[in-house]
Image 1 (tube, rainbow, N blue to C red):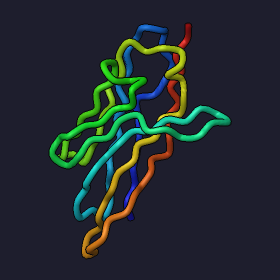
Image 2: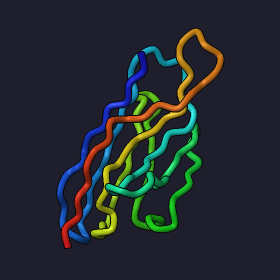
Image 3: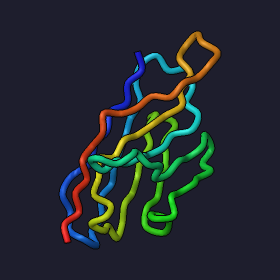
Image 4: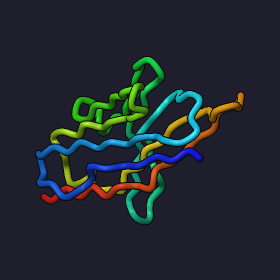
Length: 121
């Protein structure tokens, strides 16, 4: 009953900016950490950024200083502001959330469908 829906991917020139959004919906009790991952075809998925319930953040070294993760708890939404984009940022970006469902004690990870980000040189 829980779903993550992403938006904001697209094509951008090197040095440009893009903002990704991912909203969680369904039978949600609470959301703990939320994050963004990316995957290039033929390679393993890697962590980009993660944000805790009240705003603590961690970033991959490759994006620190360029990307900013944030969340709006009232909207169950996580954002990724991407600035100074490079061709090596090209990947499918996936949102992730640790969610406890209504009437349940434990939480588990959920994934979005992925959105393509392409940065041209």
